Amino acid sequence: MGRHSIEEAIFIQPVDVSTLNTPLTSDKTTTLTKSESSTLPISNNVVTSMKHSSAVSKKSYTNGLTTNRNIRFSLKTPEVPITPPTTPPSSCFTNNKSPLSVECLVRARIPTNTGELFLHVYRNNKDGKEHLAAVYGDDIRSKSLDASRPSESEMDRIVRGAYTGKLRPGQTRSNESDIPIVYSKLHPPPLVRIHSECFTGETLKSARCDCGEQLEEARRLIQSEGRGVVIYLRQEGRGIGLADKLRAYNLQDLGHDTVAANIFLNHPPDLRTYDIASLILADLDLTSIRLLTNNPDKIEQIENDGVKVIERIPMIPRVWKGNLDSNRIGHEMDQYLKVK
Image 1 (spheres, rainbow, N blue to C red):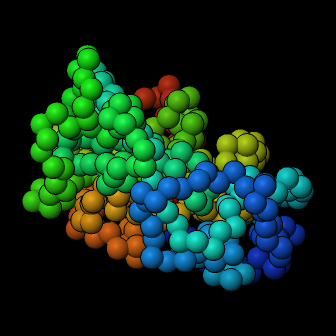
Image 2 (spheres, rainbow, N blue to C red; image 1 turned 180 degrees about the vertical axis):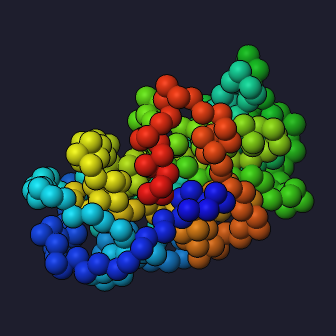
């Protein structure tokens, strides 16, 4: 695998999964009733996709890995067959025929030991999760957050973060300068990292992945420029959820790689989608970006949604830079990077 890309999944040969004992997907699609859905209500101040979702709003991207019943991956058949758990996949999306929409609920200034950022919390009508955008720079603003809402007071706007400048004790107006908010296109395309949640790698510093290192490096690069965005998507374990991710860890201890473990848990190799990230970028009025990624599928998805990626900046694993921590990064990290 070339060092210019660590997330490009390069698999060797097609395998007909109909010959495997474990089906990849169910023939039935679970439909949620209105009372069962955890979807949050969306107001009129939303950024909406022009594409209407189908019965299941998961996009039909294949990541170059799945085509109908053929999966392109290099998979060793285990010597001892493993019966997959009967637990269904942990991630299900709301059955919604409306266009996908996002809305910024609130933003707040977050001071850190390396600088300041504004954390934005988004809701959507797809999965009910709170996705995030860490924004560096005063000129990048959320259009759905700044939009006025019925019957709100100035204090309402301040509390949800729809103010200009910096707050000070005793402030009562959201825009004390009375200067209209302008979403300027004059600034150069910012650095952007679209990052999927990884509790084990970011919080526990697991050596099974380099997710935590990529997030730290992305923040460092963006802070060094003083302007940019980290979009943090709640799709743990490449979209399978934390519980199934830990089941996959147990399978890895039995000798299976990441892809094989997902297959045995009735998941495709990668369930991640980036349509919500595309709408968050649109809400921040960012139509052209420089993307920090090694994943060509990520670029393809967001460009299909109308975001122009003018430059790709590769994310180089720390282990490839020679800063090897022998106490943490070893055989398991090497195996993970080979599979990626």
